[in-house]
Length: 238
Image (tube, rainbow, N blue to C red; front, side, top):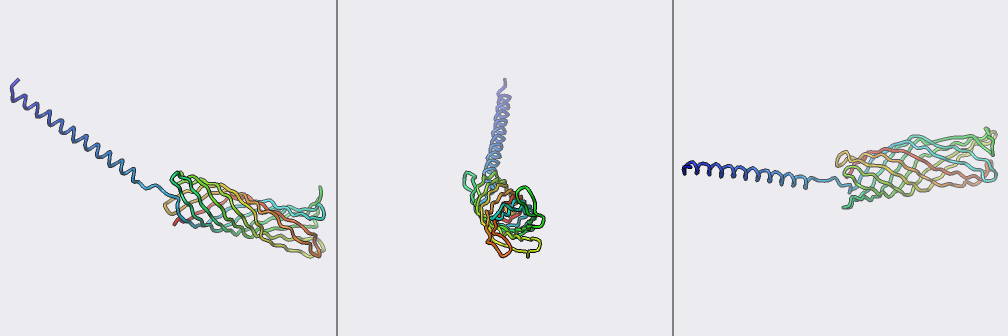
C-alpha cells in the first residue's frame, strides 16, 4: 500500500477517535450537570408555623340524667361549625414531623329530646341543648411524604355547652357550663404551594360530664357530651 494512502487512513482514524472522545465527554458533562441539578432541587419542608381557617360538620351523643330517679333524655346535638387554627411543626431528617396546634370554632351544633323513664316517655318534659363553641390544644405526629403529611393527633378539648329544661306548668330552667375532656383524631395535610396548606381531618372528642345542683323546680342532674366531626381547612405557612 502506498505511504500517502496509509497516512490518509491514519488521519481519518485519529479524526474519528477525536470526535468519539469529544462526544463521550459532552455526554458525561451533561450527565453530571443533570445529576447535580437533581441533587440541588429543593425538597418541601414542613418545619414552620402556620395559621388558617376551618369548617366542618359535627354529630354527637349527650345524655341528661336525673340523679334521684331513672328519668333521662338524649338531646344529641349535630350541626355545622367554623373557626380558626394555628400551630407549629418541625420535620426531622427521617421525615417524622412533630407539632403542636390550637383551634377554636363557633357553630350551630344543637339537639333536643323529650323526657324518658324506664321503657316509657314523658312528652311533658323537653330538653334542648346547644354547643356554642369548642376548642382544643393538641400534639401532632406525622410522617412527611414530600408535600403530603398524614398524621394523628391527641390533646385536651373544651366546649361551652348549654341546655334548657321545659316541663308543663313549671318555669323553664337554663343551664350553662364549660366542659373539659380529651380529643383524638387523624388527617392529612397537603402543601398546595410552599405557603398554602390544605387539610382534611376526622376527630373524636369526649368532653366528660357536668353535675348541676337542684333548683326549686328541678332535680339535681348530670349531662355528658361527646362528638365526632369531619373538618376541612386551609392555612398559610410562614
